[in-house]
Length: 113
Image (cartoon, rainbow, N blue to C red; front, side, top):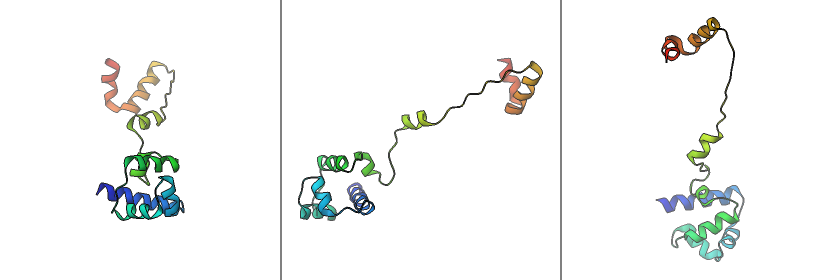
């Protein structure tokens, strides 16, 4: 199942980029007939071949596996999201009103801590 998905993704990449089997075979240094056997599942694609293909397509191996989605590590998604900080100076009565507006009745607990 996993291998079938990778082969399906390789076919999608070929189609999306208008690449021939001859070009794809050249990327991984095998004959076009051998690449045809890879696509029909009678010959397995090695990790080295997958890596060479990814390099030739200017992709990461994981992005071939997850194609058309791109894999983004969790650490990157957290740092890429914008963080906004806002500081407003208010007198005590206005501050209390704003805190109640934001936190509702819970603001008293926050202010008391």
